[in-house]
Amino acid sequence: MLKQYLQYKLSQKLSPQQIQLMKLIQLPTQAFEQRLRQELEDNPALEPGKEIVEGAEDIYEDNYEEDFKEDSEHIEAEDINIDEYLSDDEIPDYKTQSNNYSEDQDDKVIPYAAATTFYQHLLAQLQQQFIPEQDWAIAEFLIGSVDETGYIRRPLPDLVDDLAFTENLYTDEQQVKKVLRNIQQLDPAGVGATSLQECLLLQLERKTPTKAVQLAQEILGRSFEAFSKKHYDKLIVKHNLSENNLKEALLVIEKLNPKPGSAFSDGAKIISHIVPDFTLKIVDGTLELLLNGRNAPELHVSRSYNDMLAGYKETKQKTHAQKETVSFIKQKLDAAKWFIEAIKQRQQTLYLTMRAIVDFQEAYFLSGDERKLKPMILKDIADLIDMDISTVSRVANSKYIDTPYGTKLVKSYFSEGMKNEKGEDVSTREIKKIVEQLIHKEDKKKPLTDDKLALILKEKGYPIARRTVAKYREQLDLPVARLRKEI
Image (cartoon, one colour):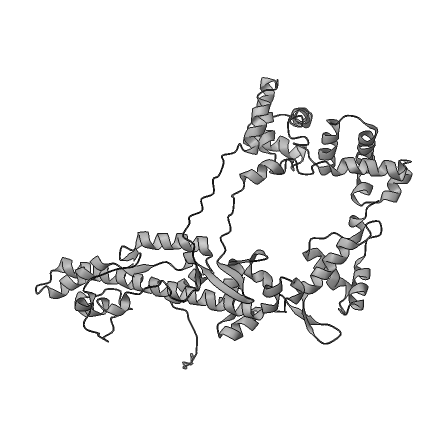
């Protein structure tokens, strides 16, 4: 037998307006400008600029407190309190009087040059070569298989199968390899290689055959694994070399390009222009924080829409069409007023959050010394400004600040902390900086292992484990000691 019972449950849900506000806060300056333009296009009741109305005090006389129905799917015109939309309180001026916004009136236009794609560059060269007609389809297919770094990553058997299934062209590996050799003669040198070893050898083939070049070819051809692992002692013994001869050969190899297609692929990528959301200046020893002026647009509710409502109010006999029109106007005015208020809240949230971060890291921002960065997590700032951690995260993850020390992502100033031997809290950023300096100054013939780095850090007062040093080194994109070794 089924039993029925009541259960009380407390839950919290975000309204659609709150969700939209969170999305606005997360947007960086450029994306916010696009969102603003879209809203102006979609809502005719929202207009840019400051509204100047003569005799406005005669129009806005009464204040009414009657609420309109928000949740009704169909809104009756009689239920709309038109005087709410004719209130002087709803014409805000968002040009702040406090000096919290930077002047950003100049539109900086960056010219972009049209460039030839990597594929077009290779195809143009191929057309200048003598390629048998029956091999043209294979050659074009191979060029299309070259990735942005200049390599053909797929094995030859797979390429043969692809030709059969996609191009209805039946051939064999030998023929594909023959055509591929023609592709590998194109510029830049090394293009069309199937491996790093082949790429470097293709580039050496085009160099003047000096003793150092020939030795480099021998090392890459016969001892590529030992070379890639920097086992220099094994290379000296195997190839019967002196240390000077090995240095000369390695110098030749170091000048080769492991990614021959990178020069073209970089130009093909979408250029991202960072617009700082904040500007930080040091004025007379104090930190002055400014919010980018593009984040503080002037918006107002359309006067013509207010006039329509005023005319509707004065009309004695209201037609069905007029009622539908005023319902439409009401919806657009609601959206316009909410969007203006949301922008104001966005400005306040951005400035309040960044101001707390700047004050928290005042010692760093005044000096630029990364060793003065305090351990700081999202909760620290959220507690200071009495906001949710997710709100601080939205600001930190997508906003940039222009400082005297460069333009950086706000989240880069957050880091975990640990205690040194004196019991003081230190930022992991400080430890990473020390690790980077130690590796930069090390003897490259005997690079420091992670164990030695951990020992040195312990002597400096930072007791951390070897695996932690390895993690910080990897985050700094620094290779292990064996791969940093030089002769």
